Length: 526
Image (cartoon, one colour):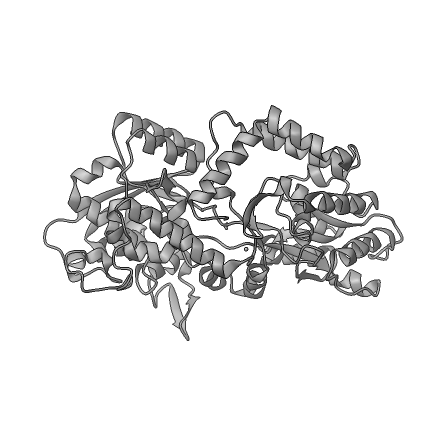
């Protein structure tokens, strides 16, 4: 499960400027998003059935044989066509014969895609990552969708303006990006430990640090042993809300602050955040293996009763099997979700990259020679982007068979397992909150709580690395030096020297300049 708010900073005026800049860019390319005044569901455009919310009669009941469409992506658990109810329903609705192939391994998928693109054996719709999108578009292998945006109005309306940008290269749309996901992570705390020590839920970073220290030194589990500590999590991410309390994104994040694009490494508050985190570590209240935690080791420590505060996603603490594990270790253990602590820079539960996307799907340029098939691809994308039609199908299956509507909200039936693979057909994404709360009804409150936390809106997903910049080397160096600062292995007085080395030896200055230029072109910052 997945993905997916600086949170709410200047959100009103900023958003209008972003939208204006985006529309101006597209108009300069001669590709206005046609029909904006009439809405995505305008049914007066008789020659473009894909503009309608449902397939038009021309699309749903065309004459002739079904149009064959081949789609490839990475995934798993796709049933055979005779048992694939989603395929059958899409075929019937759109008069197509959809052949979907999924590859369980991302590496296998990438290899297969590269072979097919090199040989000219193009699928009709296929998943690409950002680097593949750039490579294939520059090789002239992808269809520039910009002139066709008037045929994709329902899709654009569904995925949103920011998602359109995620499929752009050099100002042209070469892929349809899925609608955004939502954040899952928050702090969780042992309420029974708070009660044992007569402490309140922390609401500031200072209180958080005090509670973490108490959990370490005051025997909250009552066993008379010094075998607990305050805070754990997945590496530096455990401190995401602490950085947020200082108004700082995670190291390396780009975001808008006071109207300008800022990189977290250059945010003046970064040193303050690092100093505070260093104090928490020095107190002994942080998991001593924090930076070595991998996978779900932080979850295991929380479940075993070793830690009293954990920064974690809601599925890995609220799903039934984990709730059972927690109760098995200690029937009295009570984990509760808490809001991000406030600090001098505000209250943000870490960063959330609004430029990230779960996946992108591209169309081969060769398909422009087959207008009927191309139109059917557009019809498919629009249909599964229709909240009142195909979108419900690829989320939940067939109405009144796999789900029912209760006061307009989907509820899964006992046959929902027949369409557990439906996510493979969500080529344009899904309304994440509605989907999750229907699929995980017992976790509904935790899902909403995590989503409602204010977050710093990171922009890194919109940025392509310039030539000569190696992000792996730069990120490794940043992680190593940040670790030295917070573990008092290097004084913060040398922070500026660290930045200087980053700029010169790691070519970070070129990356900064390129990132700022790219983000400005998308309407971010002044």
